[in-house]
Length: 246
Image (tube, rainbow, N blue to C red; front, top):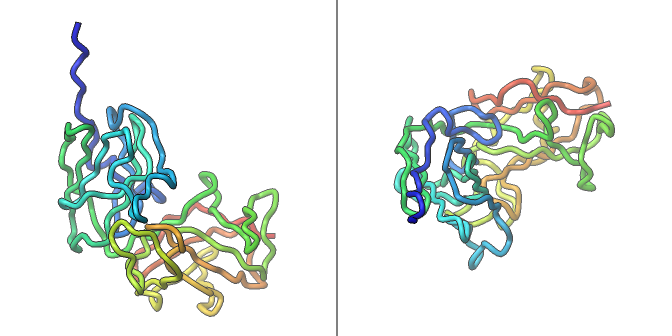
């Protein structure tokens, strides 16, 4: 008896979202997630051995999963039957809508149009209500172990736009690379803009692709457990995340 024919991936435009915000709006060099059904026949995450000659893979070995954005193969971070994490290539042309589709072993899902912004800031989270932050010694800031006002923390984001120097397609950042729109960057605590001199660095996280780090020197008068947001120009990350501060 012959095996049943495998089906093509099932998803929709509304289920192609920003990995950090969950919103259906992306930007170049931003992590995206596709949610759906039959997106892969296995579950696998990117490993160091997947980088060939320093290049990020567009197919994880043994998965057959590809994501194409405006005709360009996207680097893949994770696949499962219900989820694919990928990186929007920084080289795609800036336009209001871009065409995205996923395929598994040559079987393509629908080509959908996804909103593309110049920047789509999103902070990564430790849990649904807490931003991911580490101290300079790399220890994670948690509700049980909050950071003290006046100390330094490092935050992680995606969607902050191009950097200088730019990180080439499929490569990881080799070192510090500040965002091009640094003058338009703002960080807000409880809706109040933190003085710019308190932002020590905003740019590519060395050794990664699509990941940005924000080095923040917390003001001495920082409120307790403030809501935290970041902005590039008029693009503002969603509300609802808090930074544990004592």
